[in-house]
Image (cartoon, rainbow, N blue to C red; front, side, top):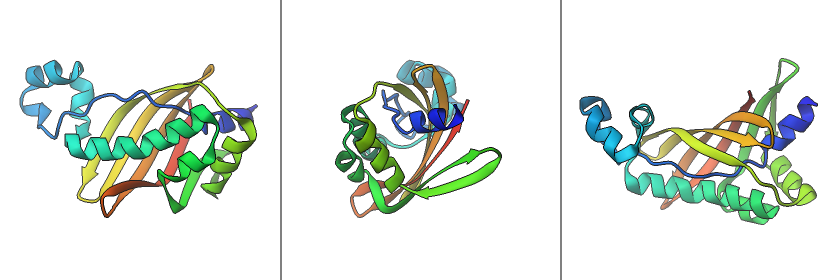
Length: 162
Protein backbone atom coordinates (compact mmCIF):
# COMPACT_ATOMS: atom_id res chain seq x y z
CA UNK A 1 0.00 0.00 0.00
CA UNK A 2 2.86 2.39 0.81
CA UNK A 3 4.27 1.86 -2.70
CA UNK A 4 0.90 2.86 -4.15
CA UNK A 5 0.93 6.02 -2.02
CA UNK A 6 4.51 6.75 -3.07
CA UNK A 7 3.69 6.31 -6.74
CA UNK A 8 0.54 8.37 -6.39
CA UNK A 9 2.57 11.32 -5.15
CA UNK A 10 4.40 11.37 -8.45
CA UNK A 11 1.31 12.74 -10.13
CA UNK A 12 0.66 15.79 -8.09
CA UNK A 13 -0.76 18.71 -9.99
CA UNK A 14 -0.62 22.29 -8.96
CA UNK A 15 -2.98 25.19 -8.28
CA UNK A 16 -0.65 28.06 -7.67
CA UNK A 17 -0.90 30.39 -4.72
CA UNK A 18 0.65 33.83 -4.50
CA UNK A 19 4.05 35.10 -3.38
CA UNK A 20 4.29 38.50 -1.75
CA UNK A 21 6.40 40.05 -4.41
CA UNK A 22 9.46 40.05 -2.19
CA UNK A 23 8.03 42.39 0.47
CA UNK A 24 8.95 42.03 4.11
CA UNK A 25 5.53 40.93 5.35
CA UNK A 26 6.69 40.73 8.96
CA UNK A 27 6.95 44.53 8.97
CA UNK A 28 3.35 45.06 7.90
CA UNK A 29 1.13 41.97 8.40
CA UNK A 30 -2.06 43.89 7.53
CA UNK A 31 -0.71 44.97 4.14
CA UNK A 32 0.59 41.46 3.54
CA UNK A 33 -2.75 39.88 4.32
CA UNK A 34 -4.50 42.26 1.92
CA UNK A 35 -2.15 41.27 -0.91
CA UNK A 36 -1.91 37.55 -0.20
CA UNK A 37 -5.10 36.73 1.73
CA UNK A 38 -2.95 34.92 4.29
CA UNK A 39 -0.38 36.46 6.62
CA UNK A 40 0.95 32.97 7.41
CA UNK A 41 1.54 32.25 3.71
CA UNK A 42 3.16 35.65 3.16
CA UNK A 43 5.62 35.20 5.98
CA UNK A 44 6.99 32.09 4.26
CA UNK A 45 7.39 33.67 0.81
CA UNK A 46 10.60 35.41 -0.23
CA UNK A 47 10.34 35.58 -4.00
CA UNK A 48 9.66 38.44 -6.38
CA UNK A 49 6.84 38.24 -8.93
CA UNK A 50 9.41 37.62 -11.69
CA UNK A 51 11.07 34.80 -9.73
CA UNK A 52 7.69 33.29 -8.90
CA UNK A 53 6.66 33.34 -12.56
CA UNK A 54 9.84 31.53 -13.62
CA UNK A 55 9.52 28.94 -10.86
CA UNK A 56 5.85 28.37 -11.68
CA UNK A 57 6.79 27.81 -15.32
CA UNK A 58 9.00 24.86 -14.32
CA UNK A 59 6.37 23.52 -11.90
CA UNK A 60 3.66 23.89 -14.53
CA UNK A 61 5.56 21.55 -16.88
CA UNK A 62 5.50 19.00 -14.04
CA UNK A 63 1.78 19.66 -13.55
CA UNK A 64 0.83 19.45 -17.20
CA UNK A 65 2.76 16.18 -17.56
CA UNK A 66 0.75 14.67 -14.69
CA UNK A 67 -2.55 15.89 -16.10
CA UNK A 68 -1.78 14.56 -19.57
CA UNK A 69 0.31 11.54 -18.56
CA UNK A 70 3.15 12.64 -20.84
CA UNK A 71 6.74 12.60 -19.57
CA UNK A 72 8.03 14.70 -22.46
CA UNK A 73 6.22 17.69 -20.96
CA UNK A 74 7.79 17.15 -17.51
CA UNK A 75 11.28 16.95 -19.01
CA UNK A 76 11.02 20.64 -19.92
CA UNK A 77 10.84 21.58 -16.21
CA UNK A 78 13.56 19.28 -14.85
CA UNK A 79 17.34 19.36 -15.18
CA UNK A 80 18.62 16.27 -17.06
CA UNK A 81 20.31 14.79 -13.96
CA UNK A 82 17.47 15.64 -11.51
CA UNK A 83 16.68 13.23 -8.69
CA UNK A 84 13.68 12.18 -6.64
CA UNK A 85 14.00 11.15 -2.99
CA UNK A 86 11.74 9.68 -0.30
CA UNK A 87 11.82 7.17 2.52
CA UNK A 88 10.42 3.68 2.37
CA UNK A 89 10.50 1.36 5.42
CA UNK A 90 12.72 3.92 7.15
CA UNK A 91 15.28 3.73 4.33
CA UNK A 92 16.34 6.63 2.14
CA UNK A 93 15.51 6.09 -1.53
CA UNK A 94 17.18 8.32 -4.15
CA UNK A 95 16.41 7.67 -7.79
CA UNK A 96 16.92 9.43 -11.11
CA UNK A 97 13.98 11.52 -12.28
CA UNK A 98 13.62 9.04 -15.17
CA UNK A 99 11.55 6.91 -12.76
CA UNK A 100 8.96 9.70 -12.65
CA UNK A 101 8.96 9.97 -16.44
CA UNK A 102 8.48 6.23 -16.82
CA UNK A 103 5.60 6.31 -14.37
CA UNK A 104 3.89 9.17 -16.21
CA UNK A 105 4.04 7.25 -19.46
CA UNK A 106 2.86 3.96 -17.93
CA UNK A 107 -0.11 5.25 -15.95
CA UNK A 108 -1.54 8.09 -18.02
CA UNK A 109 -3.49 11.19 -16.91
CA UNK A 110 -4.34 11.96 -13.25
CA UNK A 111 -6.21 14.57 -11.21
CA UNK A 112 -4.78 16.14 -8.05
CA UNK A 113 -4.50 19.45 -6.19
CA UNK A 114 -1.74 21.40 -4.47
CA UNK A 115 -0.93 24.68 -2.80
CA UNK A 116 2.47 26.36 -2.51
CA UNK A 117 3.18 26.80 1.20
CA UNK A 118 6.72 28.21 0.96
CA UNK A 119 8.90 29.76 -1.71
CA UNK A 120 12.40 30.97 -0.95
CA UNK A 121 14.89 32.34 -3.48
CA UNK A 122 18.57 33.20 -2.99
CA UNK A 123 20.00 34.51 -6.24
CA UNK A 124 19.86 31.66 -8.74
CA UNK A 125 18.60 28.92 -6.39
CA UNK A 126 15.14 28.33 -4.94
CA UNK A 127 13.32 25.99 -2.59
CA UNK A 128 9.57 25.47 -2.92
CA UNK A 129 7.30 23.45 -0.65
CA UNK A 130 3.83 22.36 -1.68
CA UNK A 131 1.03 20.65 0.21
CA UNK A 132 -0.83 18.34 -2.11
CA UNK A 133 -3.62 15.84 -2.28
CA UNK A 134 -3.79 12.93 -4.68
CA UNK A 135 -6.99 10.98 -4.30
CA UNK A 136 -7.33 10.43 -0.54
CA UNK A 137 -3.57 10.60 0.03
CA UNK A 138 -1.89 13.82 1.20
CA UNK A 139 1.72 14.80 0.68
CA UNK A 140 4.33 17.42 1.47
CA UNK A 141 6.59 17.89 -1.55
CA UNK A 142 9.75 19.97 -1.72
CA UNK A 143 11.50 21.08 -4.87
CA UNK A 144 14.97 22.55 -5.30
CA UNK A 145 15.37 24.65 -8.43
CA UNK A 146 18.36 26.32 -10.10
CA UNK A 147 18.17 29.12 -12.63
CA UNK A 148 19.81 28.03 -15.88
CA UNK A 149 20.44 31.27 -17.80
CA UNK A 150 16.84 32.53 -18.00
CA UNK A 151 14.86 29.40 -17.02
CA UNK A 152 14.37 27.72 -13.64
CA UNK A 153 14.94 23.95 -13.63
CA UNK A 154 13.92 21.47 -10.95
CA UNK A 155 17.03 19.61 -9.77
CA UNK A 156 15.45 17.70 -6.90
CA UNK A 157 12.02 16.50 -5.84
CA UNK A 158 11.67 15.21 -2.28
CA UNK A 159 8.38 14.14 -0.78
CA UNK A 160 6.71 12.85 2.35
CA UNK A 161 3.45 10.91 2.53
CA UNK A 162 1.32 12.43 5.32
